Length: 412
Image 1 (spheres, rainbow, N blue to C red):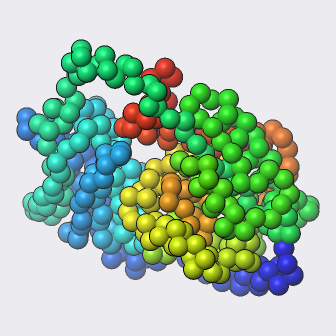
Image 2: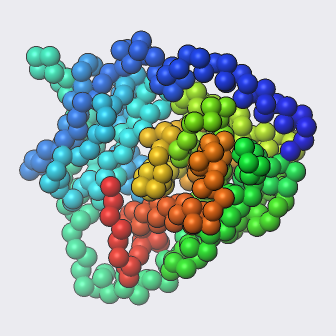
Image 3: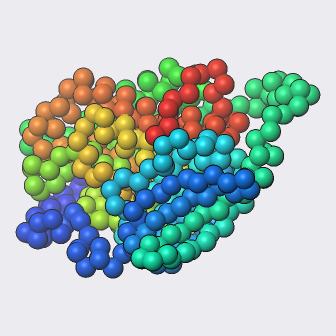
């Protein structure tokens, strides 16, 4: 890293350290912000002859927008000024003909997005009711349309489909080890360079993926070299990557801070103060040669506009949630939900993408673990499982990625 960037990093860390005197305010919304948000208390599924209803119980009325996405089929509900009360899950015994999974995540720091992954296309609309002091927002799903889509194909059609395996394509993952070359990234107390650790994790992840049928991985760098933003992005495009994962090791002025976190692109801004810090820290490496990227490459300029669309970000969220869930089985989570920030390296891609902070290299305990082959393997395996879960879920909705001869991993 150039000296000016090193000084800038040190300044940012000192600044954040001074701000940290406010304590929990750095990591959580203010009490006022919470009180002004509608609270989602529960989500339940109700069956009917003509409709299936998703019933969302709230503590107040809320502005909302409903829309659908395809490839894969999803129903998306955006709630303005809303949050959840703990983990929201579908009620037990839910029918599996229409909805395969529910996902949710904060948006723009103050809103909430709920996504229903659909097993079949369905018309959807909303209905809001208030009975006594209870507020209910219902998503009404058309059972008839789904029933038609879910009917088994005729023998003639099935025969044609059985010969269509040639249309299935390999799922390509671009693994981007952060930093490299003149940019060491964060440096641990015992002199561990982030660029070295994430390279080892990336190599192990690539090896694990390439042993799996239907999947292949490549690395944006496989040595101690510096890559500018354009080079990283072009490599992903050249290989027609289906997923981009940038691997990093976090740092914080408070050496006791530890854990894993996953970030995706934000439409408007960072979802937390931690996300803003991580964004600034990791983009020091990407400013050196890329200030005129969109002017020099009009194709990438169009990509920047495409990535502001909800569909691209929602796909990233689905993949990131799976990875975060698997990291949570191995490591403490610094952030229990997927965070969002305006990362340059993610903004320049038109595919699902995420930035993973595997652990805190600034934490002595985690730095020691990061140096070991055992922990690097464990992290690589957790990342692999998350990617695989996302790929399996994608294959259930997109026949090009179907895994008909591989045991399906459970969806959570």
